[in-house]
Amino acid sequence: MFKNLIICFLVFLAFGFLSPVSSATILVVDDFDSGLPGNNVGGETAAWSCNPEDSEQFCKMELIDTERVGDAGFCLKLTYDITTSRDYITDFPQTAYNGYWSLLNGLDVSDYEYLSFRVKGDKNTGHTTTFWIELKDPVNTSGVQITGITDEWQKIKISQEKFTNIHDWANLIELMIIFNQIATVKEGVVYIDNIAFEQRVF
Image (cartoon, rainbow, N blue to C red):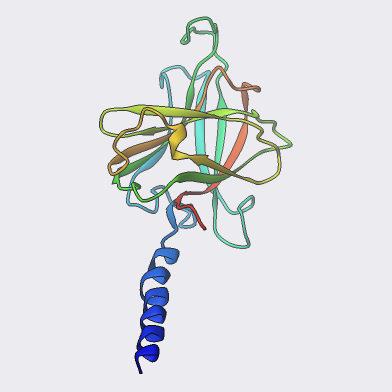
């Protein structure tokens, strides 16, 4: 009898406690599958540029279903151009910066360890092989350089430890993608899909 009680208790631990944790190993920020602006955590999204009055440079966002990851849904298409006759960045003349923002509305990711997303460039239009991605909490901003982008979908997985200046992981305000002076190609198209935070899976 006592042996049977121990077995039942161990089964309860395995299924009563472990299963809910495993089902929450991924927190989807935006899978873009609604086909509409706005992310999965209730935040607004948009493209931006360093100077909206400078029409030479821009970033345009579209949600399309022709380059998505998987058999259904949409992905984010970012068409960017950082070429300009003006000077915005010290030591990088005639170079602008622009990109995409996604509001996180105080998202608590303190139980997660990685930021992940899918990315590829457009082989016909051309694309940068690197860009900058930033996270913001109420006080701090911290960024990581993304490299090695090709014209095939790949998963990027970044340890949250890389965002060294973020101190309040329980209250994230914004995620930004930035095309700036590190871009290897000044104008092109980049596709993004399935932005998420992930737990370590053992």
